[in-house]
Length: 151
Image 1 (cartoon, rainbow, N blue to C red):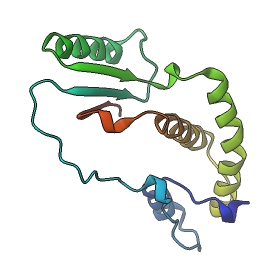
Image 2 (spheres, helix red, strand yellow; image 1 turned 60 degrees about the vertical axis):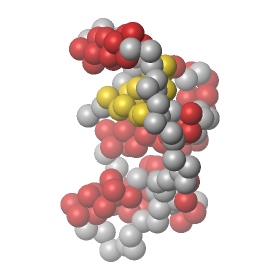
Image 3 (cartoon, rainbow, N blue to C red; image 1 turned 90 degrees about the vertical axis):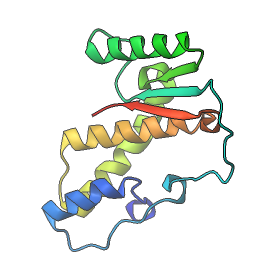
């Protein structure tokens, strides 16, 4: 049920609430979406492990893809370990299942909160959810630097 769904993107809902002004309580932040700060300090080292993350498909034809490729090559030449992650690198069957699971819940959430939903907002919220679910399967603690290439 929608009352059991705690929307994981409170900053998005906060802005939507400013526009639509629903008479509802603020959304709650899921524990797993709170920023985790490691208590361990990493020692300074010359060679870094870097994750370049993009919300767009990679590789593809275009400037962003070219930039990521060149950035990755340049960092590797300097001796760093570089990984690139993008949604199209995840298994399509898993992505499909996650989409099918979250779409009705998001629709219900927006319908109850705002009385309607925008297809673009629904689509982007679904993409964020799927991407975050996939990132949870990656050991992010092994990276020294996260470099995000997105809007």
